[in-house]
Image (tube, rainbow, N blue to C red; front, side, top):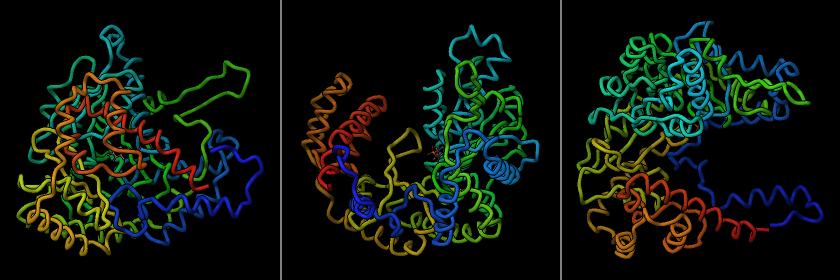
Length: 491
Ligand SMILES: *Cc1c(COP(=O)(O)O)cnc(C)c1O
């Protein structure tokens, strides 16, 4: 597409924007169990209004906008108190979980380098994390020049194993990680035990509460067996918590909190050795909209404790219903026992492939992400992020689930021999990126982005992860390269 020579009328521009949505997942209908977090119509409207009212303000320079500084300190204080902290807890508002985690890792690295001079001659500093931790820790390690050691979890509970974590610590370790809860299975790691390990070794523990940190205390209040995971636990040095997930704020909203202000100080980057303004950046973004701050502040204040508790009452009832129904079925089971509304469903029989099930549900309009196998206790599974907008549809989803399972068992879908044969005939690890893209173009065609077929998922599931990551990178390039055409056709 070229820049129009003469500008287009605003109504026409807005209409084109609407038309572009026609192939998107119809997520507002409530049939997608994926990462789109809206609490209800009232909350949606409030977030939009608050966001728009601060859209243009720039949080780059809080001395120009005391309002934004105030919004940030209010949000941080509400978050710290919610997580068992007092006024001594410091932190920053960030654009999302990845930025919060990136900063927690950076501050741990820089504090360690400043206080442990021996690290300089030991090679790359390293973080130690359960294999269930979110990949943003791997991304942080990759960006920040660190090693990241994945530790197996308990194969039954899928929770971090403190003894295995302890055994993985070396003299290069600068940070330990636990999740509250993990994304893939919705279970909370044993944070008190990991905190004790942190105290014993002097290595700080980061608790990743990105997805569920905000709602977990409400689940506990309603009787879920949620262990302690906040600043009330000795040894917890920092916590990340997204507000744009289960606090139902607009995207671009997360916090990273610290017990030790000296570590928070290591987050900040300053630079005045240039002819422009003095740069003081506590976070990765520099220019940043006030919109996410205002929207997050507004939804926390508007819902308050009682508002969130009511939302969680409904989420919990539906999650319990799903877990019990699935576990009572003879061909499916829920992995471990989630403490909140994140559920991973696996097949218990070779006759039923979870990727076929995801596809059959998709044909009925239901969207959920398949997850690949990941060692002992973690077969391929179907992940549900259960959201308020899903709740009116849960009965119908369960009925469709049962129907899909029965149909797949009665008439097993055909598998494409071509794809498996091709994969067997090519040494993917020896392919260049360009060759991988050529293969993918054959497999995926030029139809624009779409969910992978069950055959493609089975193939990916069976690949060694290092090769799979390269294939996924090539697939991304293929999708970007073929996306230009359908978009140009709209205009
Ligand atoms: C979503 C998530 C993250 C990353 O957050 P983004 O906002 O997507 O950058 C980190 N940890 C967990 C457990 C998550 O679920």
